[in-house]
Every structure is written in C-alpha cells, then in structure tokens.
Image 1 (cartoon, rainbow, N blue to C red):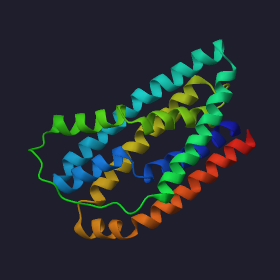
Image 2 (image 1 turned 180 degrees about the vertical axis):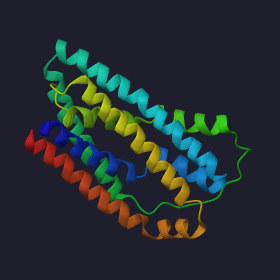
Image 3 (image 1 turned 180 degrees about the horizontal axis):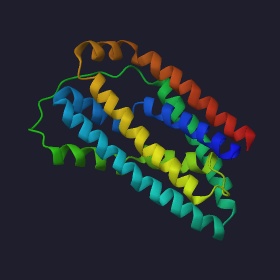
Length: 205
C-alpha cells in the first residue's frame, strides 16, 4: 500500500505542475474566461477533463498489452518520458509572460464550449506525451488495474477542478492583471521543478 501511496504523491505532484504550466488547454480556458460568460469557461473545463479520459484509456490499456509482448518497451518510454519532462520544463522556464487580449468572438453555446475543451485536449500532443510519460515513469507495471484507474480518476477530477478554478479566477479583472504581472516568474519556477523531476527520474532509473 505504501508503494501505491508514493506513486500517487509523485503523480499528483506532476499533474499539479503540468496543470500550472500554460498549454493549449490553459489557453482555451483563458480565452473562454475573458471573452465569454464564466459558465462557458467552466463547461470548456469539463470538456477538457472528459478529453483526459481518452488519453488515460489508451495509456493504461495500451501499456498493459504492450508490456506483455515487449517488456523493454516500458524502460524505453520511461527515458523518453523523463526527457520530455525536462523539455517542457525548459520550454516553461524560457517562455515569457502570457499576453492576455480580448477578442471578438461569435456567440458561444454550451455544446460549442464543451466541444472546444474536449477536442482541444484530445488533439493536444502535450497531453498525449504527458500521460505516456507520467504513467510509464511513476506507475509500476505491477500496480493493479483498479489502482491505475483510481489514479486516472484523480487526473480527470484534478483537471476539471483546476481549470474551473482558473475560469472563476480569471473572470475578475484584478485577477487577470495579477496573473499577467507574475506569469513570467510562475513559468520559471514551474519549469525548474519539472526539469528537476525529469533528471530525478533518469538518475533513479
């Protein structure tokens, strides 16, 4: 049980850092928050979290099958995954502050808001590589399927809660100004931690 708890702590930490690192999902939530009502930003957040289910499905089920046929595959993916964490950490560290602008958008609907978040996540290569990386690095091949599914459920809930909070936060003018002011520092801190994680996993492997 202690092993699974350790896996969960690493997984939760990695998810938290990845969520804080701006990517396509974040930008969709950001634009929805600025250009439309708060509810549409939250619905887009729900669409993003449902998109996570797609990535988790092929990650968890695919790994179980491939490892049986090609045991070395997991080790290869672990090194690739650790390298990818270093890469996104570097990109986050080097990125400048995010410029926030208000656009003229067409009328938004609940369906459009959901599909916008869903497809943004499903076709987001960052999400694909992240889940392949995290589950290969952190989750052991001996971890029971029900534990992996619980990990997956946590990822879905964490995404929805985080982006919903972003939507609530960024629909306030003062919050937008505060975020814009300190986003450069936030990016550098997150980038440094992700690089540390990637190096740690390579050394420990």
